[in-house]
Image (cartoon, rainbow, N blue to C red):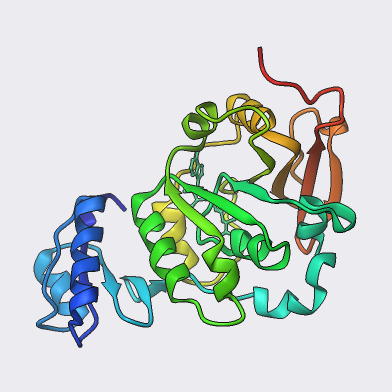
Amino acid sequence: MPSNDWISTTTKGRDPTCVTRAQEVAQRCGFPYIERRDSVARLVRKAKVGGAYVVGLEKAELRAEGLRLAVHPSTLHHVRHLGRSHPFLRAVAPEGERVDRVVDATLGLAKDALHIATFLECSVVGLEHSPILTCLCEDGLARLGPPWRAGAARIEVLQAESRSWLAEQEADSAEVVVLDPMFETARPAAAGFDLLRRLACHDPLDPELLDQARRVASRRVVLKLPRGSKPPDVEKWQQIRGRGLDYFTLSSCHDGFSAPP
Ligand SMILES: C[S@@+](CC[C@H](N)C(=O)[O-])C[C@H]1O[C@@H](n2cnc3c(N)ncnc32)[C@H](O)[C@@H]1O
């Protein structure tokens, strides 16, 4: 959905802080802010757009075509009991290793970033290309309560294209870079995820992004792929199986791990 297909507004209360934020979101994303004097559905119809970014005190969400999308810990609640033994966290920081700084180069709705920041207690820089998804992450993370609040506070959300942002960073300036590109074939997901698919950057994982990730990560690059997919030069990567997907790690000790020329 293009940015001219949205409006921003607030929940019914029209709280002044929500109005200010909805205006800011509108300006950053390049669509109109409309005062909440009617139902969201009618505002959307009158503006002849596809959907609305709705800012409330407790929640900020996208609403379009009966779908809603917001930042939510969702499935993280179900894996809390695993702590650091979750396959994703074992891929990022094996054997209780201490990491201080991770770059999540494909932030999406910040679930992986929150997983890392909460359980590894490290800072995470989250890069997201889509301005709307970036705003949604900022709003959603700022509203999370316990037990996610402390982790959310360790995430720095940046609107950036990962290749360009990584290219400007010093070599070895984070321990780990995580990549979770959009899957070519959509996997079954919550209904609202369809909105993410429409807004997301679908750039494939290309050698340039991988090279930049390898240059910036001092210890390893972690790549999340659907079951059955393989990274380039698969023999250089270590595979950790997750549920329905695999985590591939490329360690900095490996011969193939060097800065691009
Ligand atoms: C599969 S989603 C990531 C989901 C995320 N791991 C989570 O836990 O919510 C991929 C996200 O990366 C973003 N993205 C893809 N390529 C990108 C790039 N080159 N730079 C910045 N963001 C990118 C997409 O817009 C999308 O939001």
